[in-house]
Length: 261
Image (cartoon, rainbow, N blue to C red; front, side, top):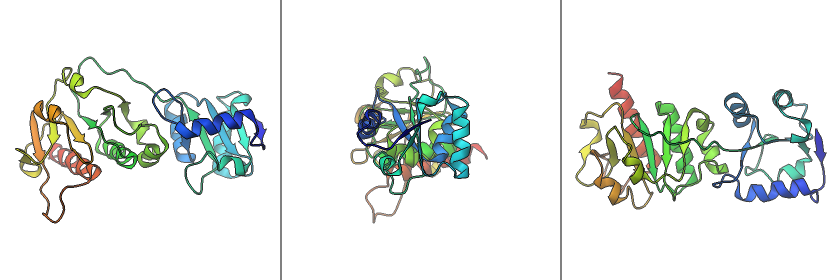
């Protein structure tokens, strides 16, 4: 294991540059914390690099993770950083002492789409995207498509919001959703307030593509025009609309409830 204590170290400077734009399309991502790193090891190829807090290597959870990493990585790909250096790479105030640098998967879109899916249309807030990915995993949805304009799925804030959901999902980024609709062999369902049926009074298809849209503008009109089904979530008039993550949770779990009865 290589120990780094100086901020002038070239490899540390390279990590700092990565931390500034980690997870953007074409760039490696940074996983923070024991849980995400364990999930990556359990479900994916070894990380590109494993970075540990040099002063916390004796802690049981880090010692266990280090042993697992040493079994799959050469020593040159395992770093022990001085705590003050690691803080410059972490995005949370109190980190857990471990980071993985990973290459995000870029799965190919199937030729035909006929399963239960979620499509995100320009959902910009990383917290919303991470929350929706976590909701999808909890509701049993396995595939998520993100349009251009969505927050990067493998950015630190989305990863933090997803809490490991990425590893239960197949996530496609930068997808032209209108073009994807040409591959669709299941209903396209959009959430909208206009010309829509009450979610709780509608028999929902067991397999469909749910579209959840931009926080301010909603689902794009071009996608709404392609919809097989338009649903609305009735709520008290004291608020104008629901948060997109809340809307996704209500829709997906109502669909799950109907499928179980």
